[in-house]
Amino acid sequence: MTGALPTVELMTTQLKVAVVTGATQGLGLALVEGLAARLTPADTVYLTGRDPDRITAAVEAMPGGGARVRGELLDVAQPEAAGRLAAQLRERHGGADIVVNNAVMRVGPDDDPRAIVDAYTQVNNFGTTRVLRAFAPLLRTDGRLIVVASSFGTLRHLAPVLHDRFADLSSLDEVDKQVEAWRDAVRDGTARSGPWPGFVNIPSKIGQVAAVRALAAQRHDEDTRRGILLTAVCPGMINTPSSAMWWDVSSAPTPAQAAVPLLELALGPVNPDHYGQLVRHGHVLPWV
Ligand SMILES: NC(=O)c1ccc[n+]([C@@H]2O[C@H](COP(=O)([O-])OP(=O)(O)OC[C@H]3O[C@@H](n4cnc5c(N)ncnc54)[C@H](OP(=O)(O)O)[C@@H]3O)[C@@H](O)[C@H]2O)c1
Image (tube, rainbow, N blue to C red; front, side, top):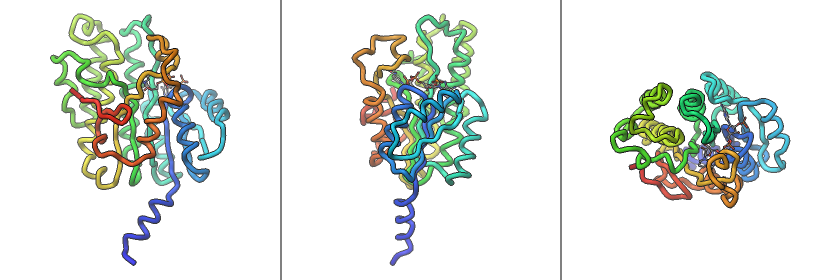
């Protein structure tokens, strides 16, 4: 018998731990339900959100069967929250296998970008980099760290004069700095007279993908060796109240349907081409 065999056995029998942010409704809720259905009763899926009552209601509404679903408070806009939950999970389980950063703050066409951009970036961007910093070190062998972005998250949606700001960032701190600069320009109104797109979703999603790319640049070799996938994903248009504020999504996929390709990324074999990229339905979307 070689020394490697017991390790392989340990890896395949290890109980799985999954965490989804912003899971009280929409795609996040569907991801929890899909993960729980596909994992075993010995595994745990954390349904996290910002509101204790909505978390409890969502956990109670789970159909049952499959993995245990456990509710936890994780308001990603709170600076210490992701680190706190990551520490608890390390203590309880020793690590995590699947982490999906999905939370989003809803904004509508009537919202004034200057009024919402602070809260918006706290949830969607600084919330993302906090989750990445807190949970990436927890990932076990074969782990998955998935950021739900969108097809807006590519540089082709940004004026070329702005590409350098996000193109080749190599740390999460650098990404945060660029997002702060954009946020400040939106807040003081200068973004409106410059080349920034008016739709705050675009720079925000580009910032999320830039964060994945920056962390991937740092972790690539070690993650590849350990079979870990770090990726951003575009779920496509989904029929949720968030998107209904902007578009007619009555014929768009339900959250459960939109969750399927993401569940494949979370549970299926890793495609090395997806590492550090933005993936939509199994295909990499070009960054530029
Ligand atoms: N819908 C689409 O067509 C579409 C298209 C492309 C990409 N996406 C992306 O897919 C993801 C999910 O979108 P969705 O349409 O399912 O959104 P949604 O229905 O609005 O759900 C958003 C979730 O995020 C939670 N949330 C808000 N602020 C939070 C905070 N501070 N901390 C933790 N959780 C927070 C919400 O909690 P509450 O229940 O407490 O409000 C809710 O559970 C997002 O990243 C979105 O950008 C969606």
